[in-house]
Image 1 (spheres, one colour):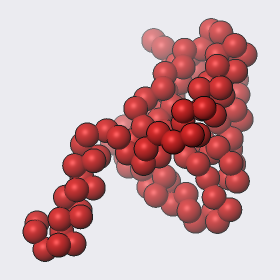
Image 2 (tube, helix red, strand yellow; image 1 turned 30 degrees about the vertical axis):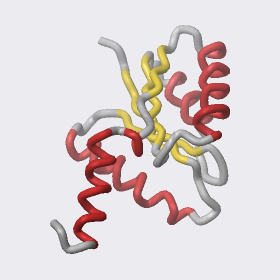
Image 3 (cartoon, helix red, strand yellow; image 1 turned 120 degrees about the vertical axis):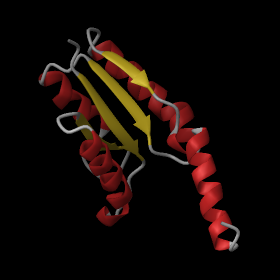
Image 4 (cartoon, helix red, strand yellow; image 1 turned 90 degrees about the horizontal axis):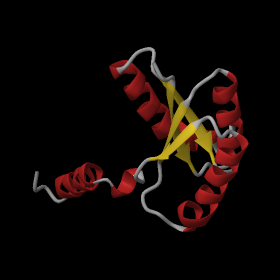
Length: 125
């Protein structure tokens, strides 16, 4: 059986409390699937970086790593920086399969959840 891990990949901020929503997402996944390997990684400011997170998972013999961008939309970091990082990681670890999931904020169910929340602010829901 293939050992698979999920990395929730976020931008990062100087304030460590900024990552609290990502920690809650991770906790929610783990609550639904105990024993699953789910990690947080950040582009900048917070630790671990995506590279460091991947290195640790590969060292533990994870063969498939899915990266879920925890961004609202695909800006420059996801269009330029992340593909370069993933290319580097694929070259460095050719036996590891890397999968890039759709950006969380562009997934239709998430878009609709945001719309429902906006409607509640208008008293419509």
